[in-house]
Amino acid sequence: MSGYVVVGAQWGDEGKGKVVDLLGTHMDMVVRFQGGNNAGHTIVVNGVKTVLHLLPSGIMNDKADCIIGPGVVVNPFVLLSEIDTLEKEGHSCSNVKISDRAHLIMPYHLRLDELMEKRAGSGKIGTTKNGIGPCYADKYNRIGLRVCDLKDWDVFQEKLRSVLELKNEEITKIYCGEPFDYNEMLQQFSDIRSRIIPMICDAVDKVNKALDSGKRVLFEGAQANMLDINYGTYPYVTSSSPTSAGVGTGAGVSYNKLNRVFGVCKAYSTRVGEGPFPTEQTNPIGDELRVKGGEFGATTGRPRRCGWLDLPVLKQAVRLNGLTDLAITKIDILSGYDSIPVCTGYQINGAVYDTIPASLKDYGSAVPVYVNLPGWKEDISHTEKWEDLPLNCQNYVKYIEEYTGVKACLVSVNPDRSGSILLKEML
Image (cartoon, rainbow, N blue to C red; front, side, top):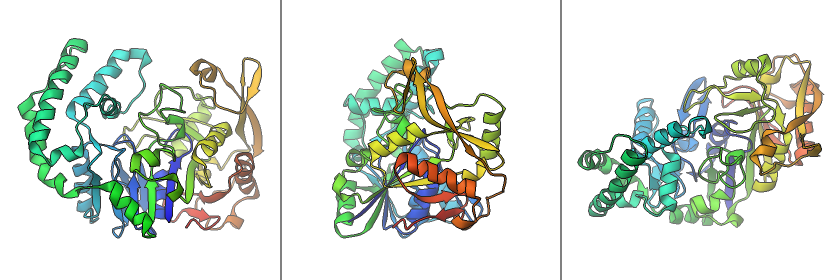
Protein backbone atom coordinates (compact mmCIF):
# COMPACT_ATOMS: atom_id res chain seq x y z
CA MET A 1 0.00 0.00 0.00
CA SER A 2 1.19 3.53 -0.77
CA GLY A 3 -0.12 6.03 1.78
CA TYR A 4 1.70 9.36 2.00
CA VAL A 5 1.08 12.13 4.55
CA VAL A 6 2.02 15.81 4.42
CA VAL A 7 1.88 17.76 7.70
CA GLY A 8 3.05 21.16 8.89
CA ALA A 9 5.97 20.91 11.29
CA GLN A 10 5.70 24.42 12.78
CA TRP A 11 2.80 26.88 13.27
CA GLY A 12 1.33 26.59 9.78
CA ASP A 13 2.02 28.44 6.51
CA GLU A 14 5.09 26.29 5.87
CA GLY A 15 4.31 25.63 2.20
CA LYS A 16 2.34 22.39 2.53
CA GLY A 17 0.29 23.27 -0.54
CA LYS A 18 3.40 23.36 -2.69
CA VAL A 19 4.62 19.99 -1.42
CA VAL A 20 1.18 18.41 -1.82
CA ASP A 21 0.96 19.81 -5.34
CA LEU A 22 4.42 18.45 -6.15
CA LEU A 23 3.55 14.99 -4.87
CA GLY A 24 -0.02 15.19 -6.07
CA THR A 25 0.99 15.09 -9.72
CA HIS A 26 1.96 11.44 -9.13
CA MET A 27 -1.03 10.46 -6.97
CA ASP A 28 -4.23 8.56 -7.72
CA MET A 29 -6.02 10.22 -4.81
CA VAL A 30 -5.50 13.22 -2.52
CA VAL A 31 -7.41 13.41 0.77
CA ARG A 32 -7.91 16.41 3.06
CA PHE A 33 -8.34 14.90 6.54
CA GLN A 34 -9.07 17.79 8.95
CA GLY A 35 -9.63 21.51 9.35
CA GLY A 36 -11.77 23.72 7.17
CA ASN A 37 -11.48 26.86 5.08
CA ASN A 38 -9.32 28.46 7.76
CA ALA A 39 -6.46 26.95 5.77
CA GLY A 40 -4.73 28.81 2.95
CA HIS A 41 -2.62 26.58 0.72
CA THR A 42 -0.79 28.47 -2.03
CA ILE A 43 0.30 26.76 -5.25
CA VAL A 44 2.38 28.45 -7.96
CA VAL A 45 2.61 26.70 -11.34
CA ASN A 46 4.44 28.45 -14.18
CA GLY A 47 4.18 31.74 -12.30
CA VAL A 48 0.40 31.47 -11.79
CA LYS A 49 -0.65 31.54 -8.13
CA THR A 50 -3.68 29.63 -6.87
CA VAL A 51 -4.82 29.84 -3.25
CA LEU A 52 -6.94 26.95 -1.97
CA HIS A 53 -8.84 27.08 1.31
CA LEU A 54 -10.90 23.91 1.37
CA LEU A 55 -10.18 21.85 -1.72
CA PRO A 56 -7.22 19.45 -1.50
CA SER A 57 -4.11 20.93 -3.10
CA GLY A 58 -3.97 17.89 -5.37
CA ILE A 59 -6.88 19.37 -7.31
CA MET A 60 -4.36 20.57 -9.92
CA ASN A 61 -3.96 16.92 -10.96
CA ASP A 62 -7.18 16.25 -12.85
CA LYS A 63 -6.40 12.53 -12.92
CA ALA A 64 -6.49 12.20 -9.12
CA ASP A 65 -9.62 11.80 -7.01
CA CYS A 66 -9.82 14.68 -4.54
CA ILE A 67 -11.55 13.71 -1.31
CA ILE A 68 -12.73 15.97 1.52
CA GLY A 69 -12.61 13.56 4.43
CA PRO A 70 -14.86 12.89 7.45
CA GLY A 71 -12.63 14.95 9.76
CA VAL A 72 -13.04 18.14 7.74
CA VAL A 73 -15.65 20.78 8.55
CA VAL A 74 -17.17 22.01 5.30
CA ASN A 75 -18.61 25.40 4.47
CA PRO A 76 -20.53 24.39 1.33
CA PHE A 77 -20.81 27.97 0.08
CA VAL A 78 -17.02 28.43 0.24
CA LEU A 79 -16.53 25.05 -1.43
CA LEU A 80 -18.77 25.91 -4.37
CA SER A 81 -17.20 29.35 -4.73
CA GLU A 82 -13.74 27.77 -4.83
CA ILE A 83 -14.88 25.25 -7.43
CA ASP A 84 -16.42 28.01 -9.56
CA THR A 85 -13.20 30.03 -9.44
CA LEU A 86 -11.03 27.09 -10.47
CA GLU A 87 -13.35 26.06 -13.29
CA LYS A 88 -13.33 29.62 -14.65
CA GLU A 89 -9.53 29.32 -14.73
CA GLY A 90 -9.83 26.15 -16.81
CA HIS A 91 -9.37 23.49 -14.09
CA SER A 92 -11.76 20.57 -13.84
CA CYS A 93 -13.32 19.88 -10.44
CA SER A 94 -15.32 16.84 -11.51
CA ASN A 95 -12.98 14.71 -9.38
CA VAL A 96 -14.05 16.32 -6.07
CA LYS A 97 -15.90 14.14 -3.55
CA ILE A 98 -17.10 14.96 -0.02
CA SER A 99 -17.40 12.51 2.84
CA ASP A 100 -20.98 11.91 3.93
CA ARG A 101 -19.69 12.06 7.52
CA ALA A 102 -18.09 15.52 7.28
CA HIS A 103 -19.76 18.23 9.35
CA LEU A 104 -21.29 21.36 7.83
CA ILE A 105 -20.18 24.83 8.85
CA MET A 106 -23.43 26.73 9.25
CA PRO A 107 -23.95 30.52 9.07
CA TYR A 108 -24.45 30.67 12.83
CA HIS A 109 -21.00 29.14 13.36
CA LEU A 110 -19.38 32.11 11.61
CA ARG A 111 -21.40 34.62 13.63
CA LEU A 112 -20.63 32.88 16.91
CA ASP A 113 -16.93 32.73 16.03
CA GLU A 114 -16.88 36.49 15.53
CA LEU A 115 -18.98 37.26 18.61
CA MET A 116 -16.87 35.00 20.84
CA GLU A 117 -13.61 36.61 19.68
CA LYS A 118 -15.05 40.08 20.23
CA ARG A 119 -16.26 39.19 23.72
CA ALA A 120 -12.88 37.67 24.64
CA GLY A 121 -11.13 41.01 24.06
CA SER A 122 -7.43 40.80 24.88
CA GLY A 123 -7.86 37.09 25.61
CA LYS A 124 -8.96 36.28 22.06
CA ILE A 125 -7.56 33.19 20.34
CA GLY A 126 -6.95 34.93 17.03
CA THR A 127 -9.16 32.68 14.90
CA THR A 128 -9.88 33.29 11.21
CA LYS A 129 -13.55 33.80 12.18
CA ASN A 130 -14.60 31.19 9.65
CA GLY A 131 -16.67 29.21 12.14
CA ILE A 132 -14.24 26.32 12.48
CA GLY A 133 -14.13 26.12 16.28
CA PRO A 134 -17.90 26.50 16.83
CA CYS A 135 -18.55 23.81 14.20
CA TYR A 136 -16.17 21.34 15.85
CA ALA A 137 -17.74 22.21 19.23
CA ASP A 138 -21.18 21.29 17.90
CA LYS A 139 -19.72 18.09 16.50
CA TYR A 140 -18.55 17.02 19.94
CA ASN A 141 -21.73 18.30 21.57
CA ARG A 142 -23.49 15.95 19.13
CA ILE A 143 -25.74 18.63 17.65
CA GLY A 144 -23.90 19.15 14.36
CA LEU A 145 -25.41 18.85 10.90
CA ARG A 146 -23.52 16.56 8.54
CA VAL A 147 -23.13 16.40 4.79
CA CYS A 148 -25.27 13.24 4.67
CA ASP A 149 -28.17 15.23 6.14
CA LEU A 150 -28.42 17.19 2.89
CA LYS A 151 -29.49 14.01 1.11
CA ASP A 152 -32.55 13.58 3.34
CA TRP A 153 -34.25 16.97 3.23
CA ASP A 154 -36.78 16.09 5.94
CA VAL A 155 -33.94 15.20 8.32
CA PHE A 156 -32.05 18.38 7.46
CA GLN A 157 -35.09 20.58 8.09
CA GLU A 158 -35.84 18.94 11.40
CA LYS A 159 -32.26 19.17 12.65
CA LEU A 160 -31.86 22.76 11.51
CA ARG A 161 -35.07 23.86 13.23
CA SER A 162 -33.99 22.29 16.51
CA VAL A 163 -30.39 23.54 16.48
CA LEU A 164 -31.18 27.03 15.21
CA GLU A 165 -33.51 27.60 18.15
CA LEU A 166 -30.60 26.87 20.50
CA LYS A 167 -28.14 28.97 18.51
CA ASN A 168 -30.43 31.98 18.26
CA GLU A 169 -30.90 31.86 22.01
CA GLU A 170 -27.14 31.77 22.52
CA ILE A 171 -26.51 34.56 20.01
CA THR A 172 -29.15 36.92 21.40
CA LYS A 173 -28.99 36.26 25.15
CA ILE A 174 -25.27 35.74 25.68
CA TYR A 175 -23.73 37.86 22.94
CA CYS A 176 -26.57 40.31 22.17
CA GLY A 177 -26.25 39.50 18.48
CA GLU A 178 -28.77 39.32 15.66
CA PRO A 179 -30.72 36.02 15.37
CA PHE A 180 -31.11 34.05 12.14
CA ASP A 181 -34.34 33.44 10.26
CA TYR A 182 -35.04 29.72 9.85
CA ASN A 183 -36.80 29.96 6.49
CA GLU A 184 -34.12 32.19 5.02
CA MET A 185 -31.34 29.80 6.07
CA LEU A 186 -33.28 26.79 4.84
CA GLN A 187 -33.66 28.47 1.44
CA GLN A 188 -29.89 29.13 1.26
CA PHE A 189 -29.17 25.42 1.59
CA SER A 190 -32.04 24.45 -0.70
CA ASP A 191 -30.46 26.59 -3.43
CA ILE A 192 -27.13 24.73 -3.33
CA ARG A 193 -28.29 21.23 -2.39
CA SER A 194 -28.49 19.93 -5.96
CA ARG A 195 -24.84 20.85 -6.55
CA ILE A 196 -23.56 19.24 -3.36
CA ILE A 197 -25.41 15.91 -3.46
CA PRO A 198 -23.58 14.47 -6.53
CA MET A 199 -20.26 14.99 -4.70
CA ILE A 200 -21.26 13.09 -1.55
CA CYS A 201 -19.68 9.68 -1.07
CA ASP A 202 -18.66 7.09 1.51
CA ALA A 203 -15.12 8.44 1.69
CA VAL A 204 -13.86 5.87 4.21
CA ASP A 205 -14.76 3.02 1.88
CA LYS A 206 -13.46 4.84 -1.18
CA VAL A 207 -10.09 5.73 0.36
CA ASN A 208 -9.44 2.31 1.88
CA LYS A 209 -10.32 0.52 -1.34
CA ALA A 210 -7.85 2.74 -3.18
CA LEU A 211 -5.09 1.89 -0.69
CA ASP A 212 -5.92 -1.81 -0.67
CA SER A 213 -5.72 -1.94 -4.46
CA GLY A 214 -2.22 -0.44 -4.44
CA LYS A 215 -3.09 3.06 -5.55
CA ARG A 216 -1.06 6.03 -4.36
CA VAL A 217 -3.00 8.10 -1.84
CA LEU A 218 -1.79 11.38 -0.35
CA PHE A 219 -3.24 12.70 2.91
CA GLU A 220 -3.12 16.46 3.33
CA GLY A 221 -3.50 18.29 6.61
CA ALA A 222 -4.18 21.94 7.32
CA GLN A 223 -2.55 24.10 10.01
CA ALA A 224 0.36 22.38 11.76
CA ASN A 225 1.88 20.47 14.65
CA MET A 226 2.15 23.45 17.02
CA LEU A 227 -1.53 24.20 16.47
CA ASP A 228 -2.68 20.69 17.35
CA ILE A 229 -5.55 20.68 19.88
CA ASN A 230 -3.67 18.20 22.09
CA TYR A 231 -0.01 19.15 21.69
CA GLY A 232 0.07 22.75 20.51
CA THR A 233 0.20 25.99 22.47
CA TYR A 234 -3.26 25.48 23.99
CA PRO A 235 -5.62 27.36 23.92
CA TYR A 236 -4.02 29.18 20.96
CA VAL A 237 -4.54 26.18 18.71
CA THR A 238 -6.88 24.90 16.04
CA SER A 239 -9.86 22.67 16.84
CA SER A 240 -8.57 19.41 15.33
CA SER A 241 -5.46 17.24 15.06
CA PRO A 242 -3.34 18.24 12.06
CA THR A 243 -0.74 15.61 12.93
CA SER A 244 -0.24 12.31 11.13
CA ALA A 245 -2.31 10.71 13.91
CA GLY A 246 -5.21 12.83 12.68
CA VAL A 247 -5.25 10.81 9.46
CA GLY A 248 -6.67 7.85 11.35
CA THR A 249 -9.67 9.70 12.75
CA GLY A 250 -9.97 12.29 9.98
CA ALA A 251 -9.87 9.91 7.03
CA GLY A 252 -10.74 6.55 8.58
CA VAL A 253 -7.42 4.92 7.72
CA SER A 254 -5.23 2.64 9.84
CA TYR A 255 -1.70 3.90 10.56
CA ASN A 256 -0.18 0.73 9.07
CA LYS A 257 -1.36 1.86 5.64
CA LEU A 258 0.88 4.94 5.76
CA ASN A 259 4.33 4.61 4.21
CA ARG A 260 5.92 8.04 4.50
CA VAL A 261 5.23 11.17 6.51
CA PHE A 262 6.56 14.44 5.11
CA GLY A 263 7.02 17.29 7.57
CA VAL A 264 7.09 20.68 5.88
CA CYS A 265 9.01 23.48 7.59
CA LYS A 266 10.23 26.91 6.67
CA ALA A 267 13.92 27.71 7.02
CA TYR A 268 12.78 30.26 9.61
CA SER A 269 9.61 30.50 11.73
CA THR A 270 6.30 32.30 11.38
CA ARG A 271 3.06 32.37 13.32
CA VAL A 272 -0.37 33.93 12.75
CA GLY A 273 -2.63 34.96 15.61
CA GLU A 274 -2.09 34.94 19.35
CA GLY A 275 0.06 32.71 21.54
CA PRO A 276 3.70 32.32 22.59
CA PHE A 277 6.40 32.42 19.92
CA PRO A 278 9.87 32.29 21.56
CA THR A 279 12.01 33.14 18.51
CA GLU A 280 9.79 35.99 17.29
CA GLN A 281 11.70 39.08 16.12
CA THR A 282 9.65 42.18 16.91
CA ASN A 283 12.29 44.35 15.30
CA PRO A 284 13.61 45.33 11.84
CA ILE A 285 14.84 41.75 11.27
CA GLY A 286 11.31 40.41 11.75
CA ASP A 287 9.97 43.12 9.44
CA GLU A 288 12.59 42.24 6.83
CA LEU A 289 11.73 38.52 6.95
CA ARG A 290 8.05 39.38 6.57
CA VAL A 291 8.63 41.52 3.49
CA LYS A 292 11.18 39.21 1.85
CA GLY A 293 9.07 36.14 2.51
CA GLY A 294 5.71 37.72 1.61
CA GLU A 295 4.46 36.68 5.03
CA PHE A 296 0.82 37.65 4.88
CA GLY A 297 -1.98 35.14 5.53
CA ALA A 298 -3.46 33.51 2.42
CA THR A 299 -6.84 33.26 4.14
CA THR A 300 -7.00 36.49 6.19
CA GLY A 301 -4.26 38.69 4.74
CA ARG A 302 -2.97 39.22 8.28
CA PRO A 303 0.76 39.94 8.60
CA ARG A 304 2.55 36.92 10.05
CA ARG A 305 4.79 37.13 13.05
CA CYS A 306 8.33 36.21 11.99
CA GLY A 307 11.38 34.84 13.77
CA TRP A 308 14.35 32.51 13.58
CA LEU A 309 14.15 28.76 13.13
CA ASP A 310 13.06 26.90 16.29
CA LEU A 311 14.57 23.41 16.29
CA PRO A 312 12.82 22.10 19.45
CA VAL A 313 9.57 22.71 17.58
CA LEU A 314 10.81 20.55 14.70
CA LYS A 315 12.02 17.93 17.13
CA GLN A 316 8.53 17.67 18.62
CA ALA A 317 7.05 17.38 15.13
CA VAL A 318 9.39 14.48 14.39
CA ARG A 319 8.40 12.73 17.60
CA LEU A 320 4.63 13.19 17.32
CA ASN A 321 4.27 12.58 13.60
CA GLY A 322 6.90 9.94 12.99
CA LEU A 323 8.36 12.09 10.23
CA THR A 324 10.30 10.16 7.63
CA ASP A 325 11.24 13.24 5.58
CA LEU A 326 11.66 16.99 5.95
CA ALA A 327 10.72 19.42 3.19
CA ILE A 328 12.46 22.74 3.87
CA THR A 329 10.89 25.77 2.20
CA LYS A 330 11.81 29.43 1.68
CA ILE A 331 15.51 28.93 2.36
CA ASP A 332 16.17 31.61 -0.28
CA ILE A 333 14.72 34.20 2.10
CA LEU A 334 17.73 33.74 4.39
CA SER A 335 20.22 34.87 1.73
CA GLY A 336 22.07 38.03 2.68
CA TYR A 337 22.81 37.43 6.37
CA ASP A 338 26.36 37.19 7.77
CA SER A 339 25.17 34.72 10.39
CA ILE A 340 21.83 33.08 11.09
CA PRO A 341 20.68 32.33 14.66
CA VAL A 342 19.01 28.94 15.18
CA CYS A 343 17.19 28.10 18.42
CA THR A 344 18.38 24.82 19.97
CA GLY A 345 16.65 25.08 23.35
CA TYR A 346 14.89 27.32 25.86
CA GLN A 347 15.99 28.79 29.16
CA ILE A 348 13.04 28.58 31.56
CA ASN A 349 13.30 29.35 35.26
CA GLY A 350 17.07 28.92 35.24
CA ALA A 351 17.13 25.57 33.41
CA VAL A 352 17.56 24.74 29.72
CA TYR A 353 15.04 22.52 27.91
CA ASP A 354 14.77 21.21 24.36
CA THR A 355 11.12 20.20 24.67
CA ILE A 356 7.90 22.23 24.50
CA PRO A 357 6.40 22.89 27.97
CA ALA A 358 2.66 22.42 28.40
CA SER A 359 2.35 25.51 30.59
CA LEU A 360 1.61 28.63 28.57
CA LYS A 361 3.23 30.68 31.32
CA ASP A 362 6.48 28.69 31.06
CA TYR A 363 6.55 28.74 27.27
CA GLY A 364 5.69 32.42 27.19
CA SER A 365 8.69 33.19 29.41
CA ALA A 366 11.09 30.93 27.50
CA VAL A 367 14.32 32.61 26.39
CA PRO A 368 15.71 31.01 23.22
CA VAL A 369 19.18 29.48 23.33
CA TYR A 370 20.76 30.23 19.97
CA VAL A 371 23.55 28.78 17.88
CA ASN A 372 24.79 31.18 15.20
CA LEU A 373 25.39 29.48 11.86
CA PRO A 374 27.41 31.10 9.06
CA GLY A 375 25.18 32.76 6.47
CA TRP A 376 25.51 33.29 2.73
CA LYS A 377 25.15 36.29 0.44
CA GLU A 378 24.33 34.64 -2.88
CA ASP A 379 20.88 34.81 -4.50
CA ILE A 380 19.84 31.15 -4.65
CA SER A 381 16.29 31.64 -5.94
CA HIS A 382 17.15 30.19 -9.37
CA THR A 383 19.43 27.39 -8.20
CA GLU A 384 18.48 24.00 -9.61
CA LYS A 385 20.99 21.61 -8.03
CA TRP A 386 22.02 20.87 -4.44
CA GLU A 387 25.72 21.07 -5.27
CA ASP A 388 25.23 24.59 -6.67
CA LEU A 389 23.92 25.94 -3.36
CA PRO A 390 26.45 27.90 -1.26
CA LEU A 391 28.35 25.67 1.16
CA ASN A 392 26.95 27.55 4.18
CA CYS A 393 23.42 27.00 2.86
CA GLN A 394 24.12 23.28 2.52
CA ASN A 395 25.53 23.25 6.07
CA TYR A 396 22.41 25.01 7.35
CA VAL A 397 20.28 22.16 5.96
CA LYS A 398 22.66 19.55 7.35
CA TYR A 399 22.49 21.14 10.81
CA ILE A 400 18.69 20.81 10.76
CA GLU A 401 19.01 17.17 9.70
CA GLU A 402 21.51 16.38 12.45
CA TYR A 403 19.43 18.03 15.18
CA THR A 404 16.15 16.39 14.17
CA GLY A 405 17.55 13.07 13.03
CA VAL A 406 15.52 13.27 9.81
CA LYS A 407 16.87 13.74 6.30
CA ALA A 408 15.52 16.46 4.02
CA CYS A 409 13.88 15.28 0.82
CA LEU A 410 13.68 18.71 -0.76
CA VAL A 411 14.78 22.30 -0.37
CA SER A 412 12.58 25.01 -1.88
CA VAL A 413 14.30 28.09 -3.32
CA ASN A 414 11.32 29.89 -4.90
CA PRO A 415 7.50 29.61 -4.78
CA ASP A 416 7.03 27.90 -8.14
CA ARG A 417 6.43 24.17 -8.46
CA SER A 418 9.75 24.01 -10.33
CA GLY A 419 11.61 25.80 -7.53
CA SER A 420 12.25 22.65 -5.49
CA ILE A 421 15.61 20.93 -5.29
CA LEU A 422 15.00 17.25 -4.68
CA LEU A 423 17.54 15.61 -2.36
CA LYS A 424 16.09 12.10 -2.56
CA GLU A 425 13.20 10.26 -4.16
CA MET A 426 9.85 11.21 -2.66
CA LEU A 427 7.81 8.30 -4.02
